[in-house]
Image (cartoon, rainbow, N blue to C red; front, side, top):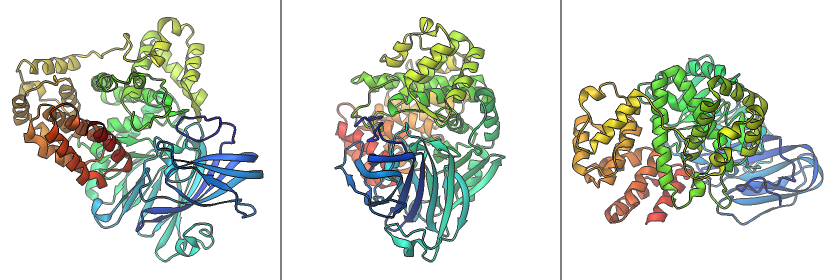
Length: 613
């Protein structure tokens, strides 16, 4: 074995598939997919082939030309990587067909029953394949080092619609013979009431960017390149369309800063509240949580981040999750540049300030394992979902901001455009970036300690807390709260979600319950429609053991599945001494809410509870 990635069985001595053709029959009653994956290689190959699979039933592996079976074996499951699927290719194969069925608890898939959807009429299913969950949908070389083009045929109930992070070709009736290799057979493929939706992805993407959703979906046009999709309910679609009306302006600003937009369309899909992330940058079709619809267009910041991924992450990708900062640090930097142009410098500075607080909190979270405060980290034997944090985002941003301050913005902008043009559609590591940086900004290593920034733990001394009059005012008001001074109405009259979020993040952790109640009585933060504000407030209430708000904590944990909210609330409930009542409460709420969370979120909450219970 010559592994390319600590999270994959992919072997560097084996050929990488350059194209995958998928046929997927979605069986809603059993929450499974019957599928075939035709993997094509650039040249004929003889020998073993290693693929990743998680909780997949592999029925057979077939030579697509002769239709003869090929020998294969499936290892016992590794707790992080899943199963090693080894196929023996005996004489010059340039393709291989794998016949498989997914498990009802596949880690990438969430199957929602009709009562869990907005209209409560039809079921819905969606994928979340980052970081290493594509292998639970189909067998593949599930590493970002392996970029692949693909086509997909999704066989679904006719009354439903499918969307994909790929170009839609057509919706049509099933054709006899298409399902002949599937474990469900051609009869089910061509059954009454079924339809096939075809898609093609012509650009090579890492497997974690494979994405689809199927349900009762509708859309609104919001720009020449953008539709907003969501469950087909006017209330959801109209509010989403209003929130993201400025998307085309952001795309144009992105193109000015980083070069051409290479993905043709930039559509948005607002998923049900169980979606575990704020957004997922699937190319052509960004997936979003409904919690970003705040009614004041501020949710567009998440869209700016996912848009920025169109250049940094999707176009240039980290080779493995150990270099995740190459995706997220660059994208956080790019997002703030877009926000600065579209929403103004003050908004960008608030954004940086919230990130600065978050970065400092992560240092506390990882104080017993500082490896995970590095940009270039060792993740051997580590589940990337367990160590997902703000470090690659915010420390990565700080590193790039430090270089910008050193060389000046015009020179750094020129460097960024050249970096993106040079490495587009490639997967690279930190050393490749540093070599390119040193070649294109000669002498940078004398002015900025590149090794300390990328391989050192903690926050380097030349990282930078942002400065602006509004930022300073908010932090000063937060510091004064400890002295018993609450902000006056005239001081917060213009505040929106971001200002309150920054204020709450800077409040001292030793706030008294009486202070919490007084703050809420004046400003009703526990009732905020902005979850960043509400969750920030509820965290403080839990820390102060202010049990008046535990009903609101329970309601919040049951109505959203975004890990940005679940992680801090569950952690605040169970972390620390003398928390027996809170631990019982957390355990009960999770037991009741668990089925409404995506499998990734279920795993994260389970790891929090197992650590502290």
